[in-house]
Image 1: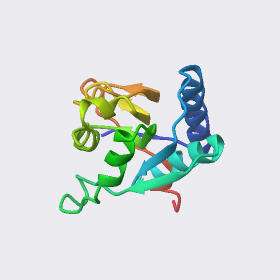
Image 2: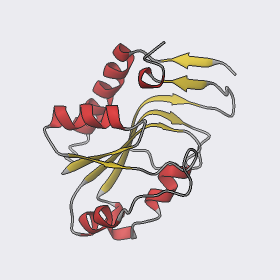
Image 3: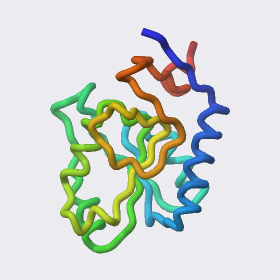
Image 4: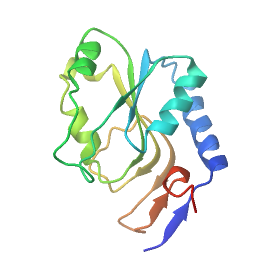
Length: 153
């Protein structure tokens, strides 16, 4: 399998692209939720830039399928009208983001948006609001390596 390596400079450029799109969309999240592990770095960067709080959420269906943190607090906030930006590094298969999206009612879904550095067109999650890169793993099954996954090498 081909690997595509992103550098720290790439990540900064991708986050800037997402921030630009958020600004053009006139969207202002009340807070950012970074999905562990891959969403933490871009979520922190967005949080710092927008000067809004950041929270974390551990839902790792691939690495730890039996452990899912409670999302009740996010659901309550969305239903109370707060704007929430969910951030991850990649929308790969869509399983994680579908799991999260299925928590909300149709009314609260309008308050929740999704941002990823890389969006896979072949994913079964189609509701990405902001992404910096578009790939199609059905046509080119490459593995994206983010700087936080191999910083020691």
